[in-house]
Image (cartoon, rainbow, N blue to C red; front, side, top):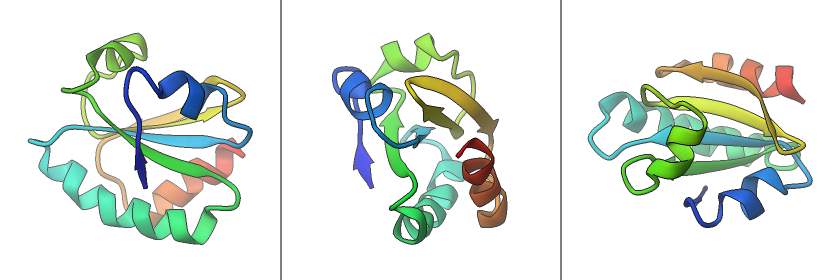
Length: 104
């Protein structure tokens, strides 16, 4: 899974040819650490349909503010340069897959 920054967000997420799931997270966030291995599994299973990236909100506050990320983890699917689905909080793998599939 790649990391994106305020500087790379537009090119890696908004201009992507396929949908992108962005994991807005922070180093201090315990639930964020629970979601990461699930996202890695999903990335391996669904990598041909969706790109999964992480954005550290403490290191990249501009993007987090632009998308009104109030809590972490927040998982947002972007398609065609627009946010289409979003959930806050750690979710089980099945719920994450449903989030992605509902946005495809």
